[in-house]
Picture 1: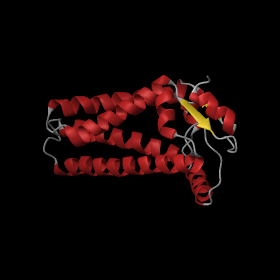
Picture 2: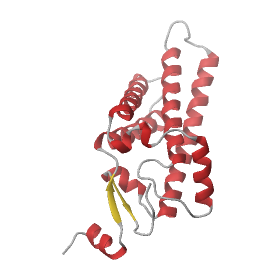
Picture 3: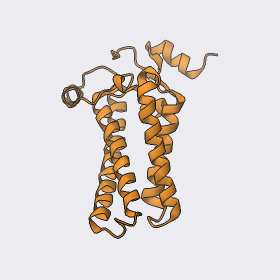
Picture 4: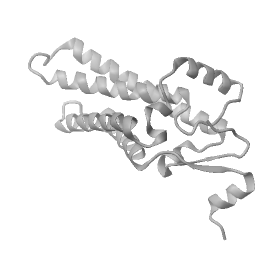
Length: 191
């Protein structure tokens, strides 16, 4: 008997593509865990909060390096930040059209860059709050809190976007970020 994925492939003409390599997936889920830990579980004044913050920095730095030298879909060239393309993609999504993107779609690309940049702002403001010069600085604490609130909004939008795009394209994006493989229905074009 063929595995379930093979049976599905044969019935619907679906195609499976290797997309996310192990490093991309590890960084993604570890960063999600770091955000969860520092945002909902750890006390902001605890030493562990600081350690997890530095780990988040290391994860984003690793992802940036991998975006320059990594596998095809992981490279920034595969999903450049392009607001005009994101607007075109949004129009196509609203009309129920558009291809399946093997890497990030244009909206997902902007969100990925946004989340990485926000994490870097959080790390920078968190680090500065611990220095002698800026210790107790209210504006820096407020900047850190605003960045965190923006990160929460961004993560919520990311999750909603993943759910909507999975529904719209019939491509299970969460399993793809676990297995590294996207299964695309036969009737969908791929970009």
